[in-house]
Image (cartoon, rainbow over all chains, first blue to last red; front, side, top):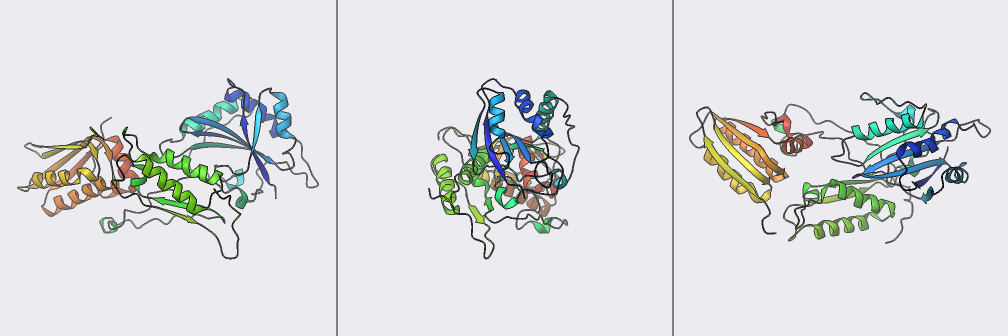
Length: 269
Length: 109
């Protein structure tokens, strides 16, 4: 299976998305390599977190030494920073995608068309609850090749509502909907009451989902143990809330560790 | 924090229905006022109550609980209760699935 190394791309100031994609686009035509003649996998991601744009490039380990150097040589001022863990969705190849709505057409003939397509998708995403990520995988639609256990670091909101609030089920004939989620070793699940995101500071600003996602994402990036992540979350909410907490602000963080499977060592804070 | 907005409620009795108009932020601080207002509006058993929340800018889980309780109470007294939500309120109610059990009219555009 292919392993990906992730880099954050820092383009020179003033560079627009079309120019960035112009750099990445030719990678789709890279030659086959290796005995199997496989096309190395490259993933380009555009992130929008609260209006801040980030570019991430995931590169097949066989290309990790050469691709960043080649791209940087094409564009003076372009920098690559190796990242160990990134806060991003699980990599999905074409074979894994289940279409549940009309997708925006993505022309690949020009960099401008690609960037226009990516921006269109970003605009369509509802920013009210989560960071928006557009993932562009430059590779063939082979079955999953990347080991998901290595890259299942993600911060995303689970779908809902799946049932009425507890105690109200008698008021509806609809049965609860069961949502299943496949957890990978090391995955964390955060359940929180609205008292966390509704905590308000002395300027009337709510803690909010975006701030929660950012805090949890940083904890994941820093590879913190779950108890430390919770401690920081509690401290952040209590610090944010003016005059102390007024409402129930419960949060539960679960970390999945299957029997016999040691979690990857986490950095101590 | 001085001046942090709370919830204000007023009752308007009209021929067809009793209107309860709530404005501001509906959280745990507002529960008692809201409940008292709804009880007062239901006094005398009016056939219909309209709960106007178009001016509500924030709704906590306590506020949602209050809406469910008001709906139950209206049903017990033989009244119908219709809620006109603001867009914020509607999103919150959709988020927890309460649009299934509350009688909602469309929020204003």
